[in-house]
Image (cartoon, rainbow, N blue to C red; front, top):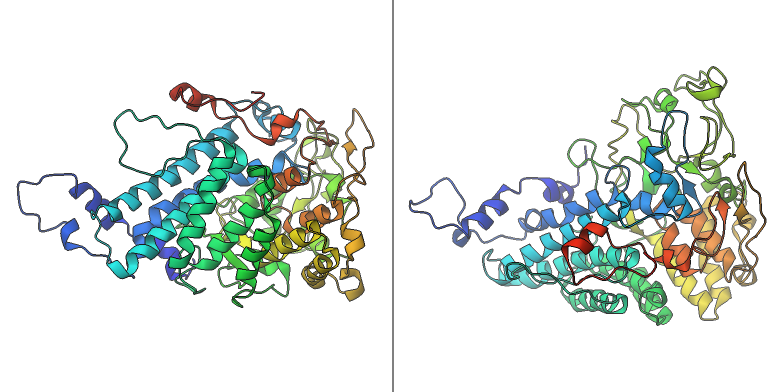
Length: 543
């Protein structure tokens, strides 16, 4: 179980807050002696975590809502990971295949859940902000601006997801709306401007600390600057105007704080007890008992890997690496050897595992870097994620690993990308080399030059399945080598779709069984149910 006090505060005893809220709306005939009365309760700084906790909990649901959370949504439509059909399932009405082929519809569960949990988080933020501003929850004046700032940055993080996935969404920044209220839709640039304004306005009121009181929260400047940097990095996509220099300034604010550093070993960021890592700037806390939902191990382990990791249950085994992506690695890169399951698989006692499903039953479970196609695989096909520590005797589908949204390597790489795009390729290369240095035993292999970062991608794009093989390559991608670097550093962290869009690759290249299917796929459709509920919403182009 996690020992972080701030973590327990999020998901601990929130009954007091609920009682305050409902008592404030109810006239009681008798004097209450067993309940907390709003007028008698003034939260101290030690109560703030419980006060804001409900607004954070939606991030857990957003990331891992069963088979269609944000993590899966960002990955399986991109060129690193896929969920092909298996001899033990994962056809599921074609939902995973539609994501790979960019043939999703406005009724796709991935879009429905992303919208639902993002706006649930926003509603919770708006409610608590209203309770504080109206005096229903009387927060002391010394804490008021900081807790409101925290909630506004947290709300901005949910709007970041909506801006990234859907673009044109309603911005609702109040809780006390009239009965029957139907929000107006804002265009993507307006949503972007709202997010940036909310963050920059809040930052002066946030803490400069980075400790147990700020872990997993937006009550500190550094997490807010990281979110701001991410907005500026993608400003050209979100608003039509690039803000590379502004992104560098936001990154430098985190770098110059001196509070974060690269782990000596990248895998330390993804350990079961990773909450003490000084590389993590903002992470979503998980616990296998008290804050469940991180099911990444179940997604990637084959059912037989239960005997490798001594987990309580076997894995679902649905998530596979796309071979073309794996082929881009330098095989001496520790992110390759330590980050992926490959070759003969063994039990915890060293016994070779054998296949239990499909045509390979009884044969050695030797994982190969091949996938016949999105429509067909066997147990042996495709590397599995090994980046995240899978702890023995855990619940497997409820890991205790916290999920990093922003880590220090991300800050470094965002700055490097902006330097590269503004003509400072050698300065960018110095940063990228520093990030790579922990990943190679031979220091010479970690070195990358500005000329290399200005070159194309080593990814051999094109269809590659049992029906068709085509050759497109990646030499034509501007700064393609930097896109490769992002892939190697942030594989299986939910970055890939957004990065591919920024580099102009997401809707223009083929991989595995995916062919380009329209530039409109850079945005997801607004869920049909939301369109039907609100006549003020206009569907995104092409849907």
